[in-house]
Amino acid sequence: DWTMEAYRDEAIRQIREQVGDRKVICGLSGGVDSSVAAVLIHEAIGDQLTCVFVDHGLLRLNEAEEVTTLFRDHYNIPLIHADESDLFLGELEGVSDPEQKRKTIGRLFIDVFQKHANDIEGAEFLAQGTLYPDVIESVSFSGGPSVTIKSHHNVGGLPEKMGLKLVEPLRELFKDEVRALGRELGLPDSFIGRHPFPGPGLAIRCPGEITRDKLEILRKADAVYIDQIRKHGLYDEIWQAFAAILPMRTVGVMGDGRTYDYALGLRAVTSVDGMTADYYPFSHDFLGETSTRIINEVKGINRVFYDCTSKPPGTIELE
Ligand code: XMP
Figure 1 (spheres, rainbow, N blue to C red):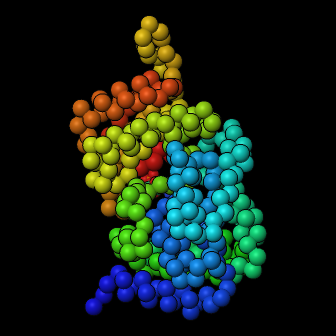
Figure 2: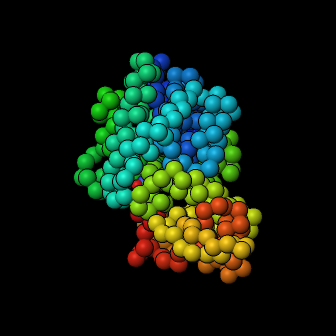
Figure 3: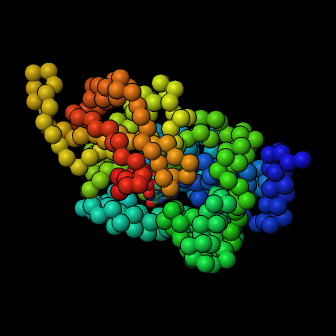
């Protein structure tokens, strides 16, 4: 008779058997999969695990703080917070092509991860939150027998490059099972239920050239939008929701004056796996109230659009 508790105990036993007294590095993204993997491995081998959290400066409002607080202070997991935002944002200056952005971020991510991982002396294993669907996907795409790193994490080939063996304790699980395991491990519900967030972060929600100004405006506007969704009790009904700062400025009026500010796009979709998606049918009241709040509370935005494109033909992200 199968329970998540029994699964957890068996997974812990297997991790101990595989790793012995050697050291493991885990790349923490702040997402559900890598977080559950990290907490599980920490239960198994304690401080033989060190997490590396690469902060590329493209995270949401307060996100880096939330991740470091949860892992370092609450779980007491050794954590390297690699604040590399200057490096990433510097290299992204003047880059506006979507694929070029992803490539730049992927390349820097590998460099930075490697640099910090090298500081962990004698590490022999790299932990990944690979799920069963990732295993299937990777096999059917490449024809190869084994998975390296999740393709959408944009860091393929990292373990080979670093000469590390893989620890993948979630390989047999589907997403909903990972969430159940996370709850079993005591991760907060608010964390487990979070919407997916892409590896390149806010870079692909800022179409065209990225600037620090735009990122700051986007972070504030996205936080107001998500707050609205939570206040209306809609967060768990929606598969993914976010704001994007559009690459155009338009004229508006505010008080006695004229404004010339950025336009914001709001996106919300329902989906099962992200492969197809339907736009979420917010009420007009919700949209009007959200638009008013964002324009009142966020300096730099004077117009708000709602994206009612489903996937296909749209993608979920804007780039
Ligand atoms: P699209 O925009 O392709 O998104 O419809 C489908 C799902 O994948 C996420 N996504 C990414 N995740 N690196 C990631 O880790 C990426 O480059 C990337 N692009 C899209 C997106 O957030 C959605 O959940």
